Amino acid sequence: MKIDERILELLYRSFDDDLSGAELAELETALAASEDLRKQKEEIASMRKTVSESGAEGFGYMFTERVMRRIEAERAGAMERAGATKSAASAKVTGRPDAVKEAAPSLFDSLSRAFRPVAMAGAVAVLALMVYNIVDNREVSFSAALGVPETTLEETLDSPLASVLEELS
Image 1 (cartoon, rainbow, N blue to C red):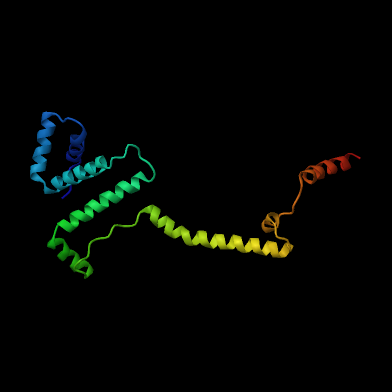
Image 2 (image 1 turned 45 degrees about the vertical axis):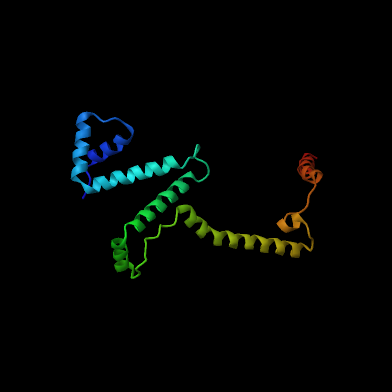
């Protein structure tokens, strides 16, 4: 059943603001009539409780990821508490009696798994080029590994100066 947008707005506002008498009565009537709305209210309350109990004074590194993992863990726990009806339903879908829907990997985990082979291949290619340059130059130095000639500051400054002086003569 689809929840009316106005009722859903009232539900969200009820957590943070005081509703007028008419709005409160409308929300209570809708809650009494709709089991889906009552479940939605429980989920919202549960998420708010999880966030407030996190105890984090600041957001910190990967705040969103930590909150989402806690919410997923709480939902998985709720699914386990649901009992045999959920197990029987998931057994029909997956063919395993102990199947519980696993949480989808996060975007960060997916990107790091996808990028790891690319990064390793790139590192191997760079090392191979550096070894080739060292062998080609027959010299073991950082500049040989990078494939750039060793130059001093005087050589770098003399060459443009010398070319300008030659043109003037």
